[in-house]
Image (cartoon, rainbow, N blue to C red; front, side, top):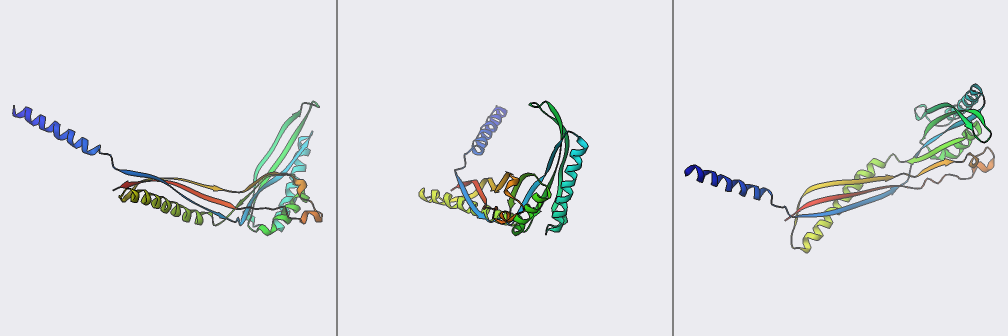
Length: 229
């Protein structure tokens, strides 16, 4: 009998403890936002040359000659040696099905980190003059991105806290510690794709402005769950 009472008491205590552990903590779930726009201060230029010829050797040779001239242009500019690099070298056979002829395509791409945007117009014009005919993209970036991203994250959390306090105040309650934080940050970087080489030339018209860097938008959206007391 004593053993039965002991087991019965143990079961009651166990269920009581489980009930306490399953108690739902009052919570308030809010979103916080923060954003800023900053001006880019450098660019990543990806461009090169593509040559088609029925002879693979000729295609590769012509392509190499253009790339060599491009590298000479880059060396004469203010671009540091560590800021340009060959990315892709391709040579493959293709076919023109309309004319029913086979030909070879030789291509090579160079990525340039241009840290002085004032030299953008002249550098692009000189590279086109050297024979570059394939601009894959120009990506504008800022060296201050991480600095501002950190500030915006803090701003978004404070925004979430302010919203939570407003809701709690309307209920005559207070918020406690943060229980869950989830981040949804993004950086919108302006980028120009597949630019036409006709936009640049060696004549005076090439000196007209063709660069519009825009702004980099850094935005953060955080979801915070606060304890409600």
